[in-house]
Length: 553
Image: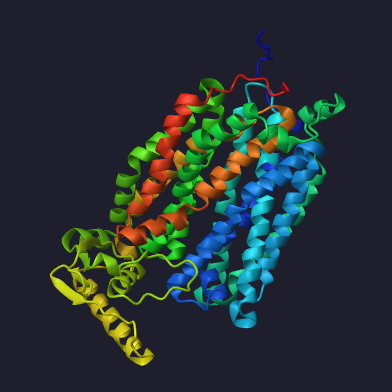
């Protein structure tokens, strides 16, 4: 027999308070988490200065990714608590851990002061942030959904979905304000700490707000009936009827949603600054404007999902991403750095080398030393963000770089005295830089030639795809699982999807680019995962908008 639901009614004052309290606290948490990502280049210099510049940046990205890697473990730990003792106090604890970890980053001495202890402590704090965020999202989404009337869950939980974007937007605004007030030199030296330190004020407000909230009615009802789960982990993952839903939620929803989300916001920012050489402040402004324009569409698509369903909107966003990423990022290059696009079209760069000399062009630990002529040639080009084609050279011959009509022979540093190796390195880099300059390759994007309107349109389109996949996802995940194990069950696929598939996207994409030489090849990672989600979700995921979330079976 179908459950009869009352007609949707206007939002009550109590419901408004729940959404505001949950959303505001979550904005602050995302603000804390994203400060690190936005300042990755400066943090690389402060905490990984014992490495060369390229390795330091990659290591900083991996430290950023470490916070994502542990998120599923936070989801399991805090999800279990949330299903056993309640939603309210569990995600009060998560914000305390998150806020204090962020504040400590702001006062942590740099590598120059305490040596290797600095990056070790930094990574430990990142892990704590990741654990806290793993417990935060499931609590906030579950809490709001369980307060929402039937027929409004998509619209109500969509407010939670805006918080990640608003948190990123807030972090960019604070960074830009501090940068402008102090100047670039002071900001790079010590001013970068200010956004981390002021987060203690946001923490105080968030804790005060969350202490005033009541437990969710669904959990209160379940607790009064004595139906809370004694072993939510066993029920969620030890019984196939629930485990199969967890797996489907991951591969048929959250994996695709995650890569579209991180491509549209984080990878787009990294692509602008690293590949297209747009200066950091300008790139941040472009992303902030696109977020400002696009963020209301989280609510639009959340509310629309109450009418037409969650599944078609999420999968349509994934499909559009898979079909349009290559042309869209190509257009972004032409709009943001036309000189680079022109140089790539006129003067192709080719690396000719013996394949046996070439190793994987990715050095996350900073311990590998590239000594072969192929590795040295590719490292120099990757460091200059130059796309190149690979050609097979004769066995035993040194690698060579062809830029337009100019050919520059590489060298092998293995066995060379340090002074001679340093001299050859300087000569080789100068020869490559001169040839790139002669071929029209810019060292940075010319602000006067940036098509500001087109860059904003492209970035806004990427954000709109984010709103399609992310706006309805919280409601759908809540609706897929029974109340007694909801916090645990929905948190794990969400955080594996967003923490692993999404959080590792920048590092994985850069690895693919460094390996293949093509600046666009990193896009294959989100395209393949988004495409797989469309197929699996389309075939095996059921629509959930009409389910009774108070049912406990």
